[in-house]
Amino acid sequence: MHRLFLILAGSVLTTLSFPNWNFDLLAWICLVPIFLATHNLPFKKSFFIGWSSGTLSFIGILYWIAPTFRAAGLNSIFGLLTLSLLASYIGLYYAFYFALTGLFLKNLSEFFSLLFCSTLWISLEQLRNYLLTGFPWGLLGYSQWQKPSFIQIAEFTGVYGVSFILVFFNALVFLWIKNKRIGYFSVLFFLALFSTNFFILSLRKNSSAKTENNFSVTLLQGNIDQYKKWDSAFINEILNTYKNLTESASKNSQLMIWPETAAPGWIPNDPWLMEQLKRIVSPTKTFHLVGAVTSQNKNYNSAFLFNPKGEILARYDKTHLVPFGEFVPMHNFLEKWIKVLNQLGGFDSGKETNLLTIKGLTLGTSICYEAIFPNLIRQQTLKGAEVLINITNDGWYLKTAALPQHFSMNIFRAIENRRTLIRCANTGISGVIKPSGVISKKSESNKQEILEDVIDLSSQITFYTRHGDLFAWLCNFASLLTLFIYKKNRTLTH
Image 1 (cartoon, rainbow, N blue to C red):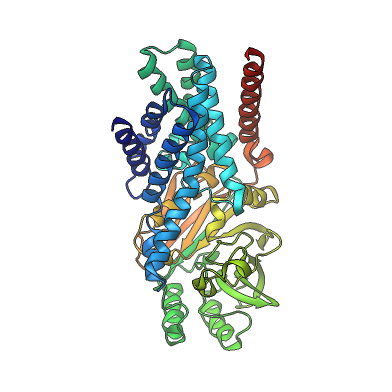
Image 2 (image 1 turned 180 degrees about the vertical axis):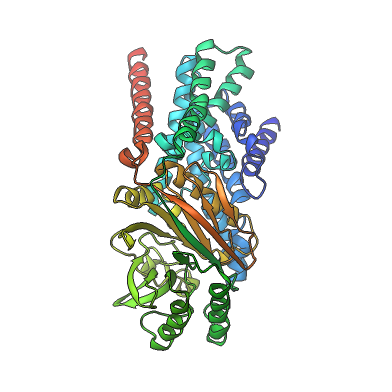
């Protein structure tokens, strides 16, 4: 019974660490109950406890999947099944983690136990970033999104460095509870890691005045009901909404940004819609970045750059699509068994992460879900993006925790690459995030808004931008080396 209580405690603490709840301090102890529950248990029992805890945690974090499916007119049972399967899948990472740490904590010295606990967690987080097209939602480090002072190490390690610090502290607390003491070296190592954030932040503050240029932007949050967007009866209403927003905005903006799929139709395929967009754009006498779908032999979810005359200069096609939302993996096989799949998907992925340019200014553009993949945004910065722009719809998520969860991950992309990141959403949350991770401007969700800001531009290349997930790969190496040494020693002793 006490193990059931520990499983529930760990799951609740993990869920509450993330939005909408945002009790981020709980992330510093959320793994301790599961360490306690798996202590001195055999591999299979630890595996089951870890899987149970991970599954329950992500049912809590991803609960919004169920109402999203229901609001889309899909079967509620299918929404609950999807939530359960996805949470169960992520639970497997927890299962392997606690099964292995339960085994190793009995056989390693204190400091190496702490290191192994931390490096193995990062190895599994990175694996989740890539396996089965990747789903790095709810990585532990993201829980600290409201504490820029705690997450500056991401400039060198990505979000994984923040996760590493959190797991190290969780394991430290567990060992203190178990042994009633902790070695000085372990404590000093943690304090050195943690204080690195403040050292990096102070360096950045001292150099913040050395910005190379600035740029004025306007974000148009239309707050269009998701289920009006594809109904032809509402085309004029949608166009009038953006017309009114552009007319109400400042005349000094150098770029107006519309959300993902803001244009109510296919462009440039629809001449009438193109003419309407031209009538909205040209009076503003500025550039516009407009989210829309297009059909160019294949169907793409795209961002179009319009010049002040209302002509298309360039476009970016989304490269990393949402499984079961924009495409269906193994569609020909799965549609035989799940008929609802015929209502999903239909887009193709763009082939390159091309940058958009305005008078010499280079924009790194991403659409919706793409911003949760660090390497994709890093590649744009490495190619020369001076500012990062993410356009998204998020109307799918209604008023659920998905809105702040999705927004929060963008803060790490800004810090990792030391770029201003502009996020324009249909229903929120829109905002401007400084290279330090501080939110400069932020909209309310489910409200029509105009956000205006003057942003700093930069061409500096950070350690993370240049070297990517080097820290995570080092963690992989350390984890595998520990496993190899452990197996070799067991062979010798038997």
